[in-house]
Structure formats: C-alpha cells, structure tokens
Length: 307
Length: 271
Image (cartoon, rainbow over the protein chains, first blue to last red):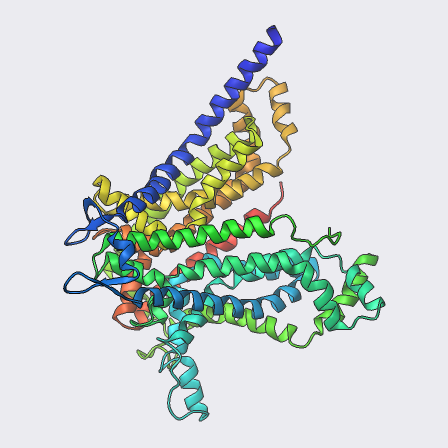
C-alpha cells in the first residue's frame, strides 16, 4: 500500500501547486471578464435609468426595442432602423472579407513560394502593423482619402479630376479601413496552410498535363481551403464588432453595430439596450466560431496526404 | 537540395500567375504606406497637413509642451507597465502550473481556453461588460479601473508566448536539477527561468504594447482624469486634423514599431 499512498500524496501535492499557480490568471479573468459578461446579460433585462445606469426591475424592453418602437399610445410599431444597422454591418463585414480574400490569397501564395529566409521576413512584415495602434492607422486613411487628402490633391494636381472625389464618410471609406485593419488575419492562416503544401503535388499535376490555372484550382485551392475558411472567420468577426473604423471613416450617419452600442452608453443613455446589443453581438460571434470549429476543424486537409 | 530545386522551378511557374506579384506588391504598399505617411507628414511644416511644403521638426517640441498630452502619455505608461507586469506574472505562473504539475489534458485545454477568452470576445462587448461591472460594484472610474481592464486582456498576450516557449524546453534539464538535489524553487530559479527568459520578455512586451495601444476598452472605462494617449488622440482627431495629431500619432507608431520588432526578434531566438 505504501507506494500507492506516496504516489497519491505526490499527485495531490502537484494538484495543489498547480491550482495555486494557475489561480491568479483564472481569478482575474473570471472576476473581471466572465462575471462582467454575466452581469451584462442581466442588465439587458432591466429598465434603463433616467441618466444612464439601470433601474433594478425586470423588463424585456431592450429586446423588443430592437424590432419595435413604442408609439405615443404605447402600441408597438415595427421599426427597422436597428435591424438595418445590423444588416449593414453584416454587409460591410462580408464585402471586407471578400476584398481581403481577393488581395490576401495571392499575397499569401507569393510569400509561401519564397525561400525560407525571405519568407520569414515577409511574414514578419505582415504581423508588425497588427501591433501598432489601430486608431492611428485608421486615422492615416483620413489623411489619404479626405477631400483635401493625398489622393484627391494628387489627382487634382495632375488634372485627372476637376473636383475632389468623395472617398470618406461613406461605405467606401469604411471598407478601405476595415480591409486595412484586418487583412493580416486573412494572409496569415492562408499562408500557414500553403506553407505545408508539398509542391511535388503541383509538379505531378503539371506532369499530368495540367496548366497553371488547373494546378491552382485543383491542387493549391483545395489544400489552402482550411486556411481560407479560418482567414474569412478571423476577418469577418472583428469587422462585425468594429468601432474605431466606422467612427473615424464613416462620419456620423454610417453606423455599425459597434457605434450603435457605444451610443447607448453615450448620447442615448440606454444601458439595457446597449447591453442587449452587445450580448447579441457576442452570441453571433461565439456561435459562428463554434460552427467553424464543428464544421471545418480536423478535416481541413481534404484527405490529401499533406505534410 | 533536390527538393529546393523543384520548389524553385515550380514556384517560378506559379509565381508567374497573372497578377500574383502585382497583388503582393499592392498588399505590402497598402499595409505600410499609411504608417509611412503619418510619420512623414509629422515632419511637414504646412498647417494644412496633407500639402507638403517642407521639412521641419518644429511640431515636435510644440506637442511635447502640451501638458494634457504629456499627462495622457504618462497615464498610458503607468497603465501599460502595471497591467503588463501583473499579466506577465500571472501568465508565467499559469504556464508553469499547467506544464510541470501534471494537469489532465482536458484541464490544460480548458484552462488555456479560459485564459484566451479576452481574445475571442469582441472588444466593444468587453468594454460594455467591464463598464457595467465597475458601475454595478461601485468602483469609481479612474486609472485603477483602466489598469484592471487592461490586465484582463493583457494576460493572454503574455501567457501564449510564454506557454509556447515553455513547451519547447527540454523537461530533462529540470529533472537533472532535481537529481542534483535542487528543490522546486531552485530548479525554477536556476534552470527554468533563465531558459524561459526570452519568452517572458517577449510576452511582457506584447502585453505592454497591446495595453499602450488599446483604445476601445479604455474609452469606456477611463473616468475623467484617466485619459490615455490613444483616447486623447481620438479626441484630438474629433476636433480637427492638425500637425499636432500627426506628431502624437507618429510618436505612438514609432514606439510600437520599436517594441514589437524587439519582441518578435526575442521570440525568434532559439533556446
């Protein structure tokens, strides 16, 4: 019995040490992240206070408000204003993802075909902007796109245009900013899946008489698919919750979900509605992530013996 | 050698796909031109910032004499140093606990997923939840609340590189220390810590930088007097595009670029 007891004691000691060591991180994250998220959900079912905050009595009003407006006589009238903002956020996120894919895929392909040293350097270049200030990088686009911006000044000086083109404070400006903000998230996973490709497969395709397009379509694209899906998810999701880009490049009227949420804690002072919107956004994001994991994880390489 | 040659040959043919090279060049220009432009225009003497009339350094002292901006920058540094330090310590201990003290695989995965939560939840949602929490429990919004909020999202940025580095260490080295009668603390102090150091430093720098750059969450939980540099720059942009905004932005960009380059180089260095 002696050795078993000793082993048990050792295991117990290890567990104790482990809990003690993991505790700080877990306590901070549960206490200041998980609990607040629960509280947010609770707040979404309360009544708004007059000057922000809440009144502690149950009310589903925040969720009703998403679709309906209360008329003067308290009857519900269908109101699509908020639904429209959600729809436009999805549309912008979708277009952004598409543009990021169209630019990001060729770039990832190009990088994957370089010599290892050069490849690592290029990937380093792709990651660096991610760590610089998002706000400032979006601000740069104001300098480039606005009416007295670099593009308009340049085109006017050359004489291509006579009046400045409007490229900012509209959907175009937001899309440029969103693609710019998140395109590294498209390139990196696609690159990761392309990097592992055994290029002898491409050689085999050529030997079997494939031309370049066929090699791309039949060999490269299927192998890159897991990276493409991951990239699309990684771009689409942060776009949905974007705040900075639409705030700077969208002007006052082109709201996205993020701005609508912020408004509830600023000018509108409707905290329960803001909490409800944030909760819905989080639910959409987490569900799409779960869907991705369930659907695509593990069967990514498509059965071709890669790696 | 042979493989390199075949890759080269096919890379050559693939690379000649119409548009691949051009798109890549466009991609990198798109990624870096805005950064270059902000930094370049901060040296423009013209008050109309996008019309270049000549090089000057005059705006820099002017911005550095702006006491509001300096106070915001100081707040940013205080927050980033504190939050990244706490996050790094929490990240190191968590990584050690999950590596050396026999967790079941499910516990390791579960804990890591929990630590990564702040990366999965959209920033605006975290901002809302944190604000609600502080108000509900009666914390006064100020530098303290900013530090707490930053510590939360700094933890995964510190933890993940440290964990990666730790998994790359040979466990036999630590076992050898035990065989030589080192206790737990000495084995950590003399063997694990020196080997883990680049990972710790990289994690701490990344945490520092995401804290320094954070805008959305800070915007929600910073009370009056706790304005950080990004929040201050945001309010400046709202007021108008001036050379001062360019200089403040350029400074922030250059600091980030320097630190991130350092951190990524550290991560590359092999044990």
